[in-house]
Image 1 (cartoon, rainbow, N blue to C red):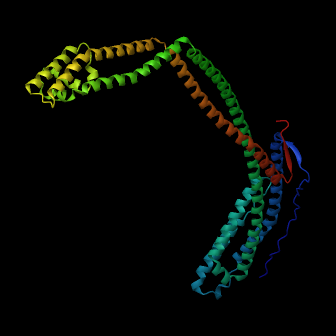
Image 2 (image 1 turned 45 degrees about the vertical axis):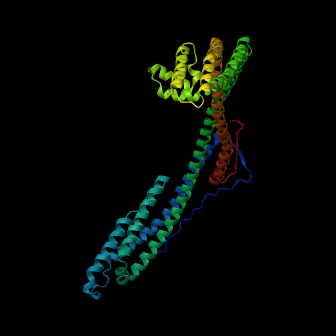
Image 3 (image 1 turned 30 degrees about the vertical axis):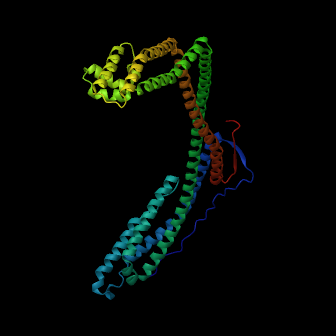
Length: 432
């Protein structure tokens, strides 16, 4: 049997050549969208033309494969020579291969007039080749053994068809690179606009913060002057003098307490023993205990009768032996000396406490509220200035980073433009 299988005819197509411009072209940002749109339209037209060329070259191969399938369909494959055991297997394999070829290659591949047609052609042709290839693979042993001339031709033609479609994939991939580059450029343009917008907003906010900072500094100066005026006043100087004297009272009180304690130390032994044997009522017992531990605290004219009563009771206790001492005469003399000294000690304490009270009254009479208010306001404004300065520093650092990013974005746009258009561009911002 003679088959009319012919060699495929190549459809020649001369691809448009994009020349690389030798010197950079100056453009503005506003011109970029049109440049991108024009290049996409050009590349879509080029892609459609190139794929159409491949389609026109591939479709005759489809017809050749379909013709082989028709020939195989009419060939009985010498059934008399077939072992009955394999006849069913061969017929099933032959039928399925022929059916696959007729289903997938029975109609011409879709014609191409646009990029949408390109993807439809790729999908249809790829699916057809894969299904036919899978079916040939499934029955490869049967077809190869019992129909070798068909097997070889189908395999070779299908491979050539598949190789041609790889070129189609490469063309589509190249166009996808263009689309991705265009998308990248558009994203960079959007990123630049967002960066400029953020810079504008943050610059406005920085101006507000600087204005607020100046206002706070003026307010601080006002409070500082107010505080200076208060501290330079005669009332404040008197206040500080009284405060100093009142502070001196603390050391004076320590000295008086020490002196009183020294005096009562002379009778500490009999006084300490009397605390435990006293039969006085609770009030005098408490007075006795305090007199033994901290005499200064109970020295006053109100307690004077009770203190004298306690001292007299101690003397009585010494005489009766209930209060034991080493030297009776010396102890009694010390008690008498203390008893005679107590009025003087009380007088000293009262004079001191009167002086301290008068100083405290003078201190309280001074109107310190205005000074405290001014000082609190000053602290608050100083804290506000610190907060504003911190925020301002953050914005300044961010704006510096954003400003530095703008030339980088422009450079990336120029680089991607060169990659996608094969032309060097220099973006001018004079009109921006």
